[in-house]
Image (cartoon, rainbow, N blue to C red; front, side, top):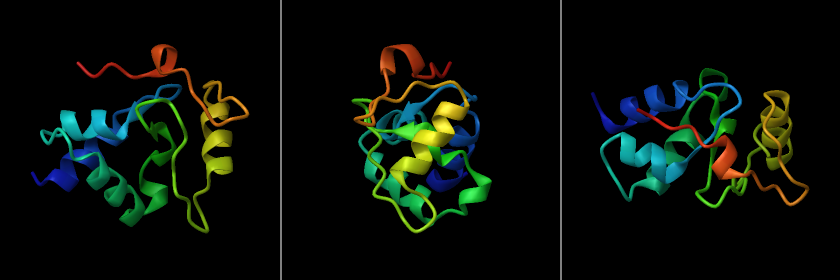
Length: 102
């Protein structure tokens, strides 16, 4: 299985109401330090096929660069619809909402 395929499967496994960091996904996929590549994969993927909004930076900040379809505002709305509290400064409490992959 390629790194890209592993990343996609990992992102699909993040449950509603939880988040993971780009680096966390990269590490679980077997490539610690490949957080940027996770972001590239998300940007190049079909948005409908992945819960992209559940991947944020390690500090809990919604750091998506955004596109016409995917914006920080949309990411905030999607996370909040799943019960994740996002502050007005686009910050998520990682201690509370980080998914613990086992």
